[in-house]
Amino acid sequence: PAEVAAVPGRIFRVENETYSVRDPKMGISVYMADTLLILREKFPKAQCVMNLRSTPKILNACSKEGFRMVDMPTPADHWQRGNEYDSDLKKVIAGTKELPDVITIPDRINLEKLIVVIGTSLEDFERKVLALNAAVAE
Image 1 (cartoon, one colour):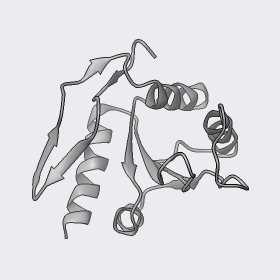
Image 2 (cartoon, helix red, strand yellow):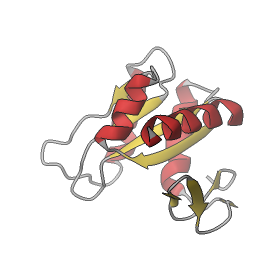
Image 3 (cartoon, rainbow, N blue to C red):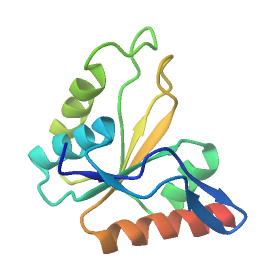
């Protein structure tokens, strides 16, 4: 995780401009770093991840763009405990043959409903994020 760069806080969009509160830093996002490292165990080509709030508009954009999507399971009581996120992610990845473009994370009491966008390079990642941005802006 210390070798994974992340943007602290949220990246947000105002009209057609995108902003972040701070510059990227190394080793500050345990959650996304762990996600990337878990993905790389099976899919070493995974290089970039970003979590986005999951909304119907973003999910529709993912479908419209033809992104390969896999869904993490919803816990029985909607509560995420300890390392359940990591173990659920490992189970989902174990059952996939190809690196997905997007993993949906269900609504959990202590974790908002998210999607994780995955890229195999900065160029691939940029293409996916810009495609989602354009599809959502329509």
